[in-house]
Amino acid sequence: MINHELLTERVNAFWEADIIDSLSSYIEIPNKSPSFDPDWKANGHMDRAMQHVMDWVRDQKVDNLMMELHELPGKTPTLLLEYPGAIDDTVLIYGHLDKQPEFTGWHEGLAPWTAVRRDEKLYGRGGGDDGYAIYSAIAIIKMLHEQSLPHPRIVILIEASEESGSPDLPLYMDELNDQIGTPSLVIALDSTCGNYDQLWVTTSLRGMLIGELKVQVLEQGAHSGAAGGIVGSSFRLLRQLLSRVEDEHSGAILPSFLNEQIPDIRRSEAVAAGEVLSADFNTMYTYAGSSGPISDDPTELVLNNTWQASLEVTGIDGLPDLANAGNVLRPYTTAKFALRLPPTTDARLAEQQLTELLTDNAPYGVEVSFDSGEPAPGWHAPPTEPALEAALQTASDIYFGAPAINMGCGGSIPFMEFLAKKLPESQFVVTGVLGPHSNAHGPNEFLHLPTAKKITCSMTSVIYDWGQR
Image 1: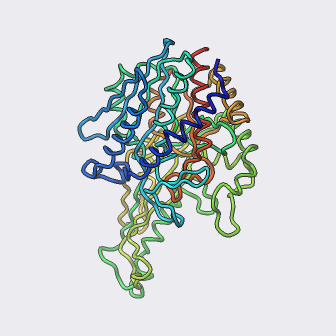
Image 2: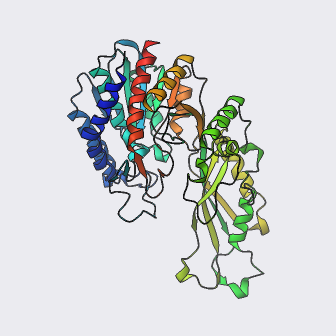
Image 3: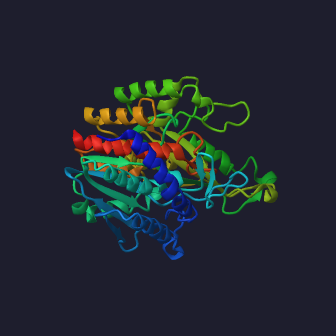
């Protein structure tokens, strides 16, 4: 049996002595995902990050651990590790190393490519999302070995294109199919947690469409006094087109093809999660002024975030900065937006229908174009087997001192739907450290160290219990 007290002690010590310094060095490598650094190969940051974690793994001197770096031509690298087990079964642990871009608004003393530890938080881009995964996975192996616990074979897969939608991963999965085998359990360490007080298990992920909508009214700008009232404003027409998708008063997404029936079990989970998070919604984000959540109903907030579609305009082109904003009716406006899709929505079909909705019957016959990248599919977990649910509850009770909570995640991990189709008989544990204010993708991103340590303990316990089933 696991000595849980010893496991907690050893995991905490291993994180402090062997992980945090190396993870801090990893944070300081600006290895942005290919969508944000098209010259990633020439710049060399991705290769440097991969080499850094490989050097750290070697330094751990884990007996019988096999590690291979795979590099398909023109594709980001993928790291595969295998550790033999005494049980005829396989567990796959997934993580990624690529990062989101810098973003603005970092507090004084903090920066995206500078690792700063303040008490229980390690600040910097990519530590929690999810550079810690490879470190946690190796810690799990070492802890199982130290206590001589029989366990399944463990495969660790670390990719480098997740923040770009994992375009390279299916190719690697096909190439590595025989080495990976057929895992009965997949653990992904790239998700969120509603608080830092218990283990959170993600049961669904939303899909995503990233698109650029351009409205062009003139070939060149014109004096706003001369053209205003004659030529339509490209900004107004852009708003009008977006209103075909979103009700600007409520934020509700209007087209029926972007709405899905919520399964009863997920609605029940949302009720339970909402009860736990009810008071936290008012402090979960850095609301400005006297604002707060858009609803007083915690269940509605959970479902809005996990099963309803939502739209955010993330960038605007065609507008000069304020210092250079002359009195001109501008020729065009382009908006880049992220549209989160319900977990079970067909992302490719939604892309086709959305393109038609935005570009057909343009107001005044102006020129409208819509360009979207590869859509990211959502994911809906299969029913959790009783043995796995019991293992998760045991781990949460022991290491967090509170029950595990199942809840959907508003973000996207494209890999999960691909893997679910490839491994239809597998069970999934999708969890992570990205809780309140951790701010992945934004300014002041941090890894909550106590949660990372507890998740490391919890997944060690889950893998052992799963092998004993």
